[in-house]
Image 1 (cartoon, helix red, strand yellow):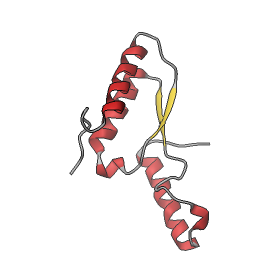
Image 2 (spheres, helix red, strand yellow):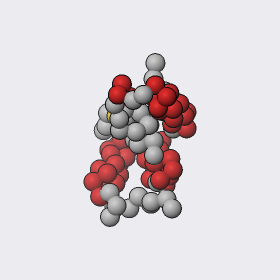
Image 3 (cartoon, helix red, strand yellow):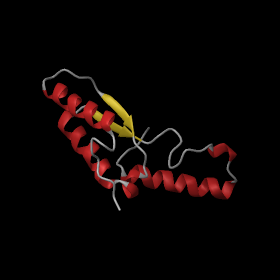
Length: 102
């Protein structure tokens, strides 16, 4: 079941991001890139949508995958077969979250 973003669930993130949206609306903010867990797609899609809608309002917020990709891990320590699946999942996450890096 999706977890809705409420002030009780994440008071810092919600309060700060709401205030940021107001500042950006007044022209008083800077571009910011956020890392968001790709697991929000499945575990908390409402929360992910809340961040995406906020970013649309500011026009200056962008999202990237965490440095480790699909999961918190050390890919260099994975066997080749596991690493291949990890890369596939990370690429899928990037497509679904509309993130890319060149």
